[in-house]
Amino acid sequence: MTDGRPNGFPGDYTNASMRVNPGTCDPASNPLIGVMHQWAGGPLASGTTAGLMPATSTSVNGNDGSTAANATGCNMAGGNLTAMSQDLSKMPTTDIHSNSTTGPYSVNNPYSPYNSTSVNVNNISIPRWIEVASANALDNQGTVIRSNNTLKPQVYTILLEGNAGAKRPNGSDSVAEAGHEPTMQNDTDSVVRTFWGQQTAQTKGYFVDAPDPSQLCAAFNSIATQS
Image (cartoon, rainbow, N blue to C red; front, side, top):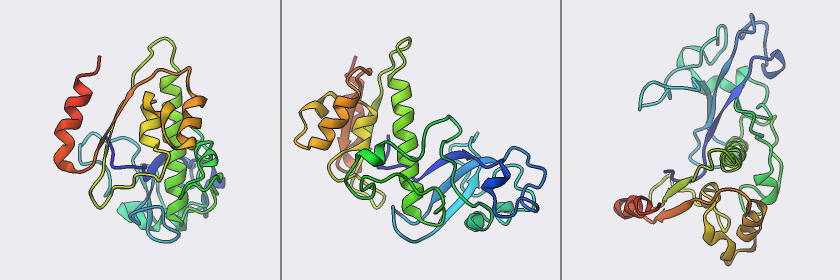
């Protein structure tokens, strides 16, 4: 379940070329792996970006207040996450699961904030690019999952609208695509139909839209009826 586009992704910044001052920030080049986020409230041209947070968590509260391991000597160490841009020079072109962060979802989507563009990985201080990179990684991971011909997993997705964080894309819906919702093939939007055509061989899932929090129960019940 999600309220729209992802606002962060886990990446590997161990290579010295990923850091502004590798001589002082993780000088031993120990594994520097963590999540980069936009904290601007949306894919904006300016605003707060933050990281690196641990890529995994043992708590339901997540890791928003802590810094990833091995950030020795970095400005972002000790939970000073908004100093990330002083330490990192760019985003990786793939996340830690080898999913591309540069496309092709954003390239094939003409709607804002994608605008049919590949991600500029050098602009880590711009919230928009982090969010678009995250959406690409999510979409590519969905492709990997749905293309598993051994498990043939079905992906069920719920989109929560009606709150301050809701970011339902105009036209093509990345959440519906993640679930490979069959109704995409008859959508009135040609972009959505194109996405459907690109993944017809993949396992089909199910997508439910909850316009506001009061309708979440109905959304979960709808998911529960699927076989």
